[in-house]
View 1 (cartoon, rainbow, N blue to C red):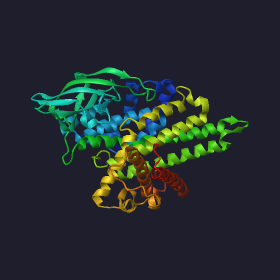
View 2: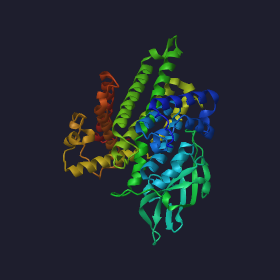
View 3: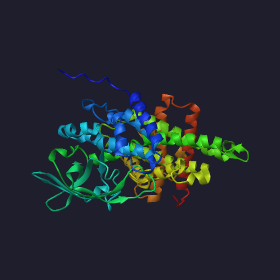
Length: 482
């Protein structure tokens, strides 16, 4: 007899159950945001169905990018570190197993994840952070499996997981490491991966970071399947999967900051009138709304165009743009909220201080924004070269990621003749300009969704156009600052 299946559950039902658990946790623990999220708390979210969106249906899940993104947004409204934590578990860990794990590995791991096991990912090394392609963690293939050894650090969830995906390069017979990077699934109870140092952090206190010494044996079937066609597609899939989730993590966070700012400026009395009646306070709150709306449109764009449970190795440009634009908005918004609160905004564990400390690393971790801006410039210059275009203005009008943006932006700025020999500071500015242009193009692609009024869209457009013109003016004037 075939067991009767439970009726399918909707995205809204999952989100409602998760919200109920979050409400309970917020009232039960005054120190919830000041320490790593406990396994007991995680199990309550498991019971509410938090892992369903990233697990295939044959294992009791629903495998939905839209649900995952909506979940991350809800969590970031509650606590940004919790959203980051779930992003690591669902996208940096589970989605890689969905896309690149073989059937035997999937049969092993998915039921355990649905039952509460946690997985993390280990890529970064002490001397190879942004230079991940030259990581020194290596592996040998033996008759008993793969022997993987090395040192990793800045692993989120260090010491908290049952599983880790470990990135390593094959050590050839000449003792040189191969160019491509492979990933291996390690079960922590088997030993061989030890936290040798915990990293204290000023923010993200709901997560534990550290340095891990690795000397493990991995069964053959727990090596991820390597896609063919280009160098390091698996590594790019990992990076892009995380960066494409930034609009989701940013949206709830920016919504919370906007609401907190509105509430505070209406309640705070200065000289017998509310702070909300002062022009500068209004200016800050207006910008918080525009930034929230900008992220909302990028969130909508991500839902309409991205499926993180299929390979996104070819989505590097869009992923980089999402990451740099949204992480900048998050930090600017949290700083603005602190300014509105004044001295009380600097109080430890108060929401404004926590929001600032939690949002700061989003510009640094998962690829420094400075590096990604330059990478954006390189990617667009490469596309321009392949198209054999010679005029940058004309190219922007035909390039799919910028075709909807007004070409008038670059008409009066002769500096824009991009080449690989530009100084890094100019490449960085070019990347900043292009990131904003591509973000605006994304917004125009989905503005017919009617999430915002025409006036709201115009406000976003005016702001981005002003920022882009400011960058171009800086480049054309020879300004040496960042």
